[in-house]
Image (tube, rainbow, N blue to C red; front, side, top):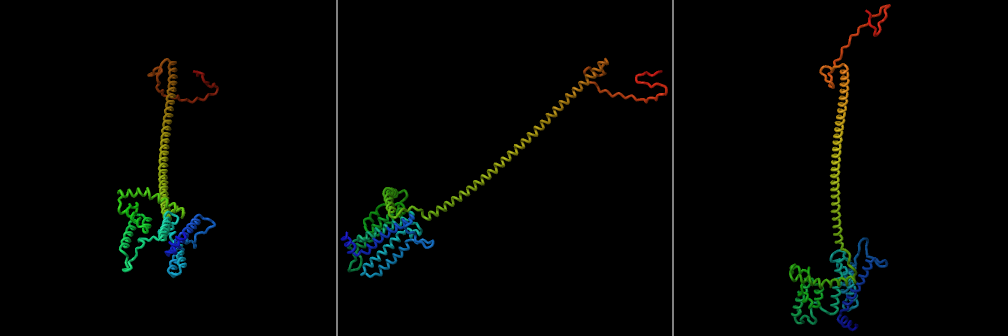
Length: 392
């Protein structure tokens, strides 16, 4: 292991790059441990750095460290290898802090623990992979042993052609949505050839420009995405969440959109409830009006019935009274006829024009006899009494 380190790192002058690589990995791991403990709200651990209401993200410290390390690497002379390694270490620490919040820089929003925050982990993994390949001595877009012609000072034809071909294949691979294949293919050109030949991923720029929705290539791309790509993505997400924590929060803009949608829904429901309440009030008013009309109709009908019943009762009472009067008159007339008949029978004859048992004509009243005043009694003559016959 030591011999390999001496041969691959010290002998090739890659010690500053090795310091950058180690500092980058250690800083990233410690940063993730720190933010996960802060998220878990552990009492004995640190808290977020704030100034008043302002939350200072660690990307700020990363930018400062990158500036110090970059300027220091330029300022340190070549003979001071230790200082150069120190500058590389500082630059690696700053790079880890910056790339750990790459999603925040990309979206200009605090999406650290959201699904969009996985872009930061992807950027860190890409940086580790590229730095590891450089440590192994693999050159991007070139071959070992091909150098500029010392006589003319220009690149050899083979290197120029390989450089152009690799760049074209890298661009095609990236446009087909194969990010990892394109980046690693810069160091392993054979991967660029494979990525450029195979079908593009669904939703990539190449797929939108070249594949129709019903084409055979698009269907094959969708089938390969389901069979191969999605299991790999699930495995990558599991590794990312195992190292960096779960990104399960809702993005702030999505929260804002959801809040706005909820507010619009509440307003629509409030309007619907008010309309329903008004409709119910109108319907209740209509029902009350109908009930009042029915009540008035019943009262009118009851009054008509009562008036009709009163009229019928009055008519019945009048009929009963007339019948009683007729019966009484008949009885009185019958009695009068019977008395007159008895008197006629006692007299032996009936009045002219009257049959026995018939009606008697009205009898005119007999004239009253004039009353003569009695003569005063003379002296010595007895008074005439009632029933005494007068003497001649």
